[in-house]
Image (cartoon, rainbow, N blue to C red; front, top):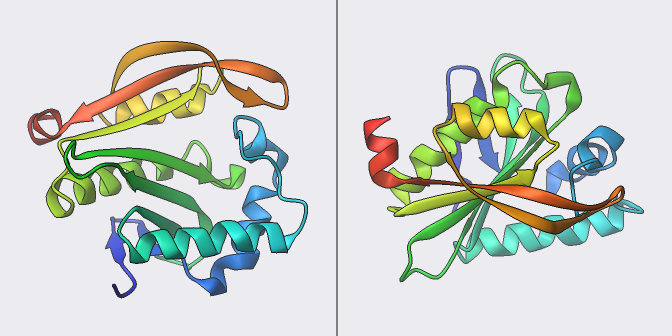
Length: 181
């Protein structure tokens, strides 16, 4: 499968490639980005390269679509967004994203999530997309709710963060919800 490009008014979402390594490593090394991230800050670029190569392989097998988020106007890398596709029988995807804090609170995450939902339902023909976030991650709570995902649950102490075990809110959106939003 060739590189995949999705576009919104302000953003280009392009499947990650080897040339994104330094941008991805920088993003994953930002303390504010890591605050609600169970992955942890990579110790060096070789660790980040392992993640990147796994994402590229998963893209080839259509198991996970990790996109570099770039501003269309300047081509600046501002983050990552991913759709993980589960068992084809269930037609469920899981969503995650990370943005550079310089670009928080500008609507970019909501815009990127909206485009990945469109891809999920129109191109991948999924039935459902899910996402979860730490309950203290108010920014992500707002993004998911603005994007039309419905809070369906609260899991206790499931996310191992540096600060300790965190509860999560669990969100979901069905294709019929997305179509009628």
